[in-house]
Image 1 (cartoon, rainbow, N blue to C red):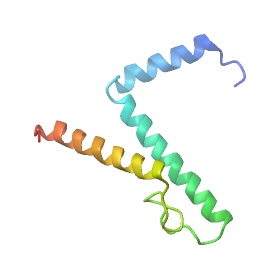
Image 2 (cartoon, rainbow, N blue to C red):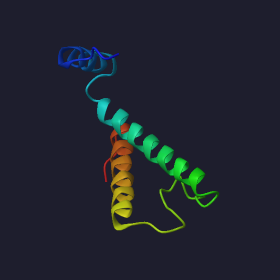
Image 3 (cartoon, rainbow, N blue to C red):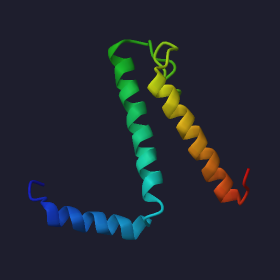
Image 4 (cartoon, rainbow, N blue to C red):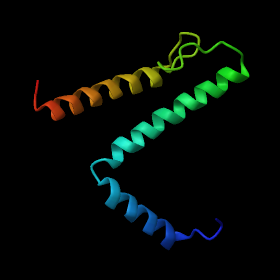
Length: 91
């Protein structure tokens, strides 16, 4: 797989845009980021034993950093906006 250069990556990116559409790409990226965060938290939990029961909420031993709280608030807001957009309602 060592032959992937810029032209090949551009072709792959163009195919992805054609398959999923430009509107769906941010949603796919967001979902992938969440999955990677959960995976990372799970692997941390395996290294440290059964300490991480709060993996889904992104907390470690019940504490959240300001950055995690802000990210959680932003995700909730964007999900609310997406839900309103999908349902055709506004607040």
